Image 1 (tube, rainbow, N blue to C red):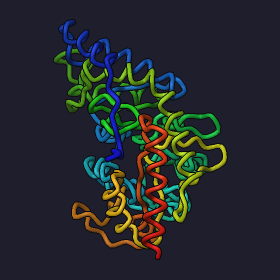
Image 2 (image 1 turned 90 degrees about the horizontal axis):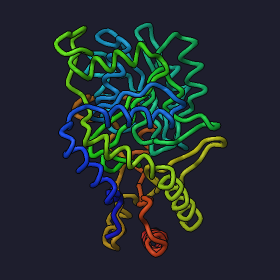
Image 3 (image 1 turned 120 degrees about the vertical axis):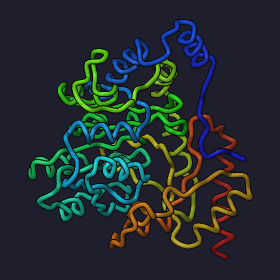
Image 4 (image 1 turned 90 degrees about the vertical axis):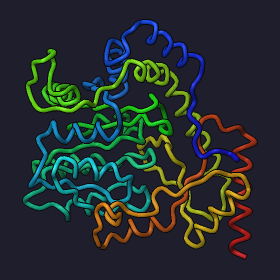
Length: 358
């Protein structure tokens, strides 16, 4: 089976972890501080605060902005549930809006239509590694005096006109889950240009305190460990080359696949292909079964829109979201794929599509 994702952990990461264990400083410490500083170089030198997950990054970003009960936050429904969950956990209400079918990202027109007097923020997702339309969303947020929060969990090093994601909104959250483009095992990062917001996130992740036993506000325990940060520092040095490999692999698949809709990349946008996602207008689930039988790992992200999950249970008319949930299928694109594996993926997809269409 060619795996859909393959975390790349090598001897350097193992050595980095051993060094931390020998140091005796295992909790949040100097490795976390160094990781934050080094990650900042990839988000236009913004302030960075490392936390224990991508969900925590979004949750703390919202809390730092003061978002809570009575507020609404506009989010796409076609994404992982953590986006909506992070809003709901603050006591605010996630307002689910439709996506652009070409990129699967939040539609600025749909976001505009969803604004009410209770709207406090817009939180687009750079889904699959393609940036949302941040220029239009920034203008929309500014026009209505709303916070703009980037869910960049899947988009490390993605950019628009050379400006990286994580450097467009008031605040942003990244994820370092094992299947992401880089990993710390579990972990996340908050980025912001506002030093006061950064400090609030720092307090919130650490029980509300900067000095021990001097709690300034009610906080959480969302710290990253030095073990995680040590892994992340090594992974970060490899991320640019891994990203180029993902982009090359995506280009190969786009050039060789037939009978399916391949990913769109907007002019001036840099797609980092956390997922290589195709659209299959008819027989998507049958194609999944056929590819798995052929030894090609694949998966549907996401078969159920967030608003329809039992946790939210809403009935909304989001036509592009519905279409995407019925038609998308993600194929392997990770940087460790060999040329032979790429050829196998393309040949298998083309063969299965042809047989299912017969």
